[in-house]
Amino acid sequence: MSQSSLSIISEAKKFATDIFKNKVSESITYHNLLHTEDVIAACERMANYYQLSEEDRTILLTAGWFHDTGFITGIADGHEEESAMIAVQFLKTHHQTPEFTENVRKTILATKMPQSPTNLIEQILCDADLYHLGTNDFKQKNKLLRKELANTVGNGFSKKQWKKKNTEFLENHTYFTEYGKQKLQPIQYENLQRLKDQQKEEEEKEPVKEEVPVIPIDTKSANPAPEQANEPKSKKEELAEKKRREQQTDRGISTVFRIMASNHANLSHMADNKAHIMISVNSIILSVVISLLIRHLDEHQSLVIPTIILVGFCVVATIFSVLATRPNISRGTFTKEDIFHKKTNLLFFGNFHSMQLDDYDWAMKEMMADRDYLYGSIIKDIYYLGVVLSKKYKYLRISYNIFMFGLIISMLAFGIALAYESFFAPPVVPMPAIH
Image (cartoon, rainbow, N blue to C red):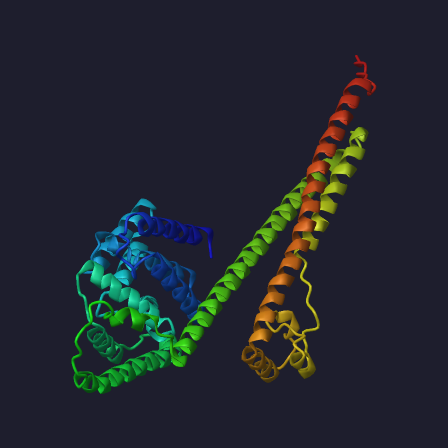
């Protein structure tokens, strides 16, 4: 992405984060900074899936950061309009075009229930806003939403009422994008079925509760709530808790890997830019020296050595800059034994670019089915990216040092040569006039 797009997204993130941290009430337990960050992650995932253009991606992510800032008012009603207003004011102060600002505003308003997206960008944000419905985090996020409603509008739904409302919502909700329909809708149906099963179990238990005889309460020992609270969890609950913790761990690991890969990519991009700058500067210097200075060396013999010094340092600095950016591609093949023994990192194109698609497809499925192999490949990929970065920056440091010290030495040499020519060169004797 261009620097201007990255800048506006970064400023939007900073502005929205400040609102959520300092201006949105703590009673907003669901529509907070964590939810917004989840929405942004989902937007980026779908933007990559659809390969959005830079402009569309910038509109989507900017709208994503602002879409819930309207909760600064403390209430849900009309928060989309408030969010859109905050975004418009922000974009005006940052001198964005009216067309860009209007697109961001419409994208935010499309998330208002019932959602009404009119294009792909709006569909992506709407699906990202309700992304949790199609994930295993649904139960946890749902608890936060219920708590938020109780804090803000006083809707103290009973568990039975809340499950009924969620069942109705899940039955009527459909994702807009093909991505959502393929990857999220199936898990949404599982969450819906789980709610229905819980409701059915509760309905079956209700008649049994009514037949329980009333027992006189002993004031010294009768409060069953604490005893029930201390009862050991069932095996099913323990398995569910273990699964939830594993999912949280996997999500945390994925986040760490994503951040590290992004940081490595940014550092590599910076290294390439620095090398490009060095190559360009040295090329300009060499062009000037060759076109202007060398043709006058016959008249100024004292400048020969300084010129050679300058050209030599520029050439060597350029060579190291080229070494920093020179690609290194391996043979690009692997064998089935490499996959079975987990020797090949399939995440790096240099290890598979010469393979057939069917072979690569098989190998990737083998890797994805093996959690240790998958994580091991990611770790290897990050490690070797670091090795390549170390090599790039090593050559760059040498190049910049050569250029810096070479420039100093060359200027001193030119100064000494000019001073020598001024003080020690034989004076030019004028020719006598002929009468």
